[in-house]
Image 1: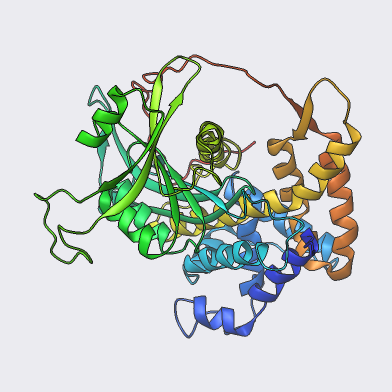
Image 2 (image 1 turned 60 degrees about the vertical axis):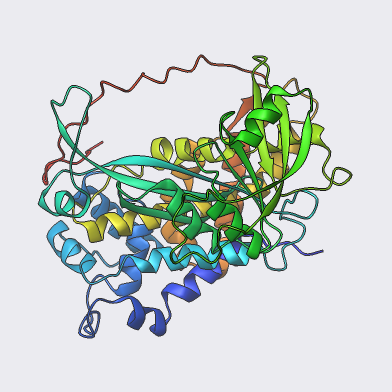
Length: 441
């Protein structure tokens, strides 16, 4: 058994961003980052990792104050205009690949830390949308959309996430044009899943093509499906059976051009009924066929794990604040989106040890307690430059952060229910974001 601590991932990140190979690969031009500047390639990346949420000049002043404290006593200043010019030299893929590096490392030789369900990783795939700044560049890249009253043009981006619900890790995330469908994006995520994973998706996703892709890649699936999804599902829903294994075929009216199967292809799936607290019956389709290894009684709880993706979106939007972009070009938006994915994973990693300690400290109380996500991110953000620049001293900083995490916990109150209001935001419109308007406080 082995266990990787937060320091391991800090060191991996440092090694990645300080590498000459990384600089060469992720600079836009061969001429970029060749001269000695106040803001180096590594310094630019570290500044971006702070998640720029306030007025840009305030963020830069705070960054260079941290540099003076963490590295030297030399007073350094940098204008927001110069920072923008430096960002133009950086490819957004750097943060995407950095996140992939960290998420992959999390599962290697980390048996004591990684949570599994009967030997499987449990992954959820789901989509959402985010508001983007309104300007010529984003309109060209993403298009505009009207709200319900057609009174305010907005720019929306389609987001799709593949998320490990047991370990709270984002394995893949994409931001693209809203016209890209969630189902097609989900199949791109599936190419990054591993054999024996279980992928859970809601009723917007089930289709033969996706099931076939997971079958050939030896990935398991659990779909919630509509009761009228197929004649077999309708018949099963109306029957007295609680589960049934059936053979399904693709729709013969579909086009099979460029598909790796024909109309005679078949897939065995197991249909399971799950009774909800509201007495509504939901139908699950799964490739987990063994009734001995995977009793039907477990699937209600297992499918509910998909809710972890929903709570992640809440953290991603409302705590990490992914929609509060400091830049308005598509290049800058992609930089910050990928950076936010990486920081959300680092937040999960750095709070795991603290959560273990909190479980022991608050054991025996009425409620279980979890680390406060908002405060923990704020604490990490305030010390991030020290974490990534002080070498062996980062262990001390991590201990100080852990102490703060454990002191700032919130109770988990089970069985809380809130009325769902699907039309709550139907009339909401987002003000246009101008180039010179940023949060100051």
